[in-house]
Image (cartoon, helix red, strand yellow):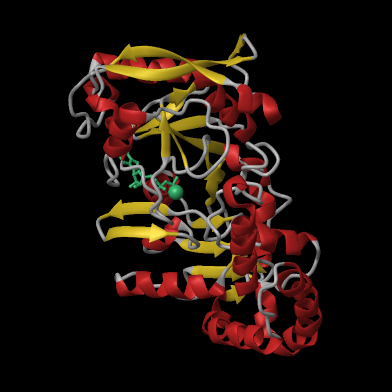
Length: 425
Ligand code: GDP
Ligand code: MG
């Protein structure tokens, strides 16, 4: 059984929370793209955890976690995250964490270049998390990056480092005028943070192939939503990796495998971190009350998130490109304060109404068309069955199901592990 669990919207849909819930049904959880640029928040019986790099299955005893070849890994950040979790009582050993030897290392100069470029852009900045993700993916495709497996062979690193640093300094030093990077500093950085993770490094493709033969159940965990995918998202305000489910087997290191199903995580309203078109955006008091109700501040950065009502064109498109077989609708409880719930039902693009999600500059010109659905005005966070929900909440769920043309299998009504409703579909 191979299941991808992916975001439908702009990210922060509650993927970490859903993976934490569903991971008990799987033997292995794999992260297949991205780096520490996003954050998942998980609240369970062990406490509250923020994960940037580690798969969410790390919080469950007996689940094996894999960091796949599609990832870019800042090993200094990884060391910090492993320490934080260990201090919180989580056991991390080579038995429950395996890091692909083919994953790419995000170096300190990638972070530096991210900062230098965002600062250079000033007001035209991309709103990057400044964690080096775009520069490291660029280097990967330039074939001038280091891979996790290289940490097992420092002679190889030492051989390649001077040439790569000479090339990097053409931009860092000669281009941006920053002081030059030194090869020996980078080698000692790799030694400091690489040596402690040596035992976790392996050929995860071999490992997973054997486990699949044994019939193990596998979950692929995406870190960003569909609308941040490099090809299908709101380019250029996307991430630099493929976050869609279709890429999951590739980025996980088992490119010959096919997914059995795709669980699309969709939020009952919208939020977006950083720059870029966000058609359904609410402003002023309307934004403030929704942001406060939903606690919409970034897990990785603490930045206030932009918020809006549920966005039909964007969510329908997100479900389509993810190939979602079913939906997990999250944060429905957040809407309980509304008398009338704002929903962006269509876009107005140059005077034409559409429920299709546009690309390019058309998306920048799109204006939201809002309608208002009945609110329920009471706490729903203890509801365990669909029938327990007030009629207006049931109608809201059914409205969304129809709008995105996918069945809703889970409804999350709170951040804690057991605060959810499972539907028969
Ligand atoms: P991710 O990046 O998709 O994993 O999502 P984040 O962790 O960045 O943001 C989701 C936030 O909403 C976290 O703080 C979760 O604890 C919280 N959360 C998830 N599901 C629910 C829910 O159903 N209700 C409420 N109130 N909070 C939720
Ligand atoms: Mg997040």
